[in-house]
Length: 94
Image (cartoon, rainbow, N blue to C red; front, side, top):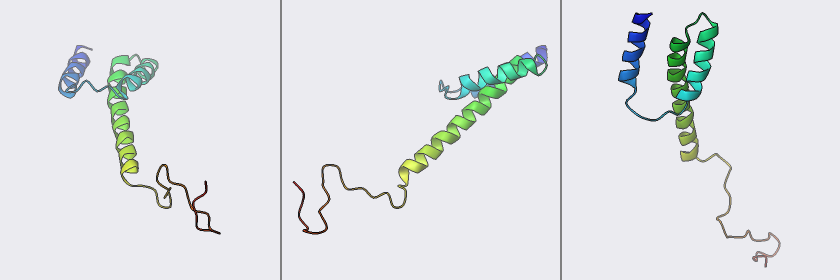
């Protein structure tokens, strides 16, 4: 038990370089509960859940950035404030 605690403390010390907890708290809660019910390993489950939750949050964030950088094909919309011309007369509607 002391060995698990020591390893967990070392892992947290080396991985906790940022105060960015996106996904970590949610993953730690889920992992802690799952670890508790899977044989009273709540701490190990919480650490694992935090790491996996952070990884998934980072992956989701990167996917969102890629989608925002590359516009979807066929999603061309007129500029804000401009009005499309009518096809019959070619004049702007009033």
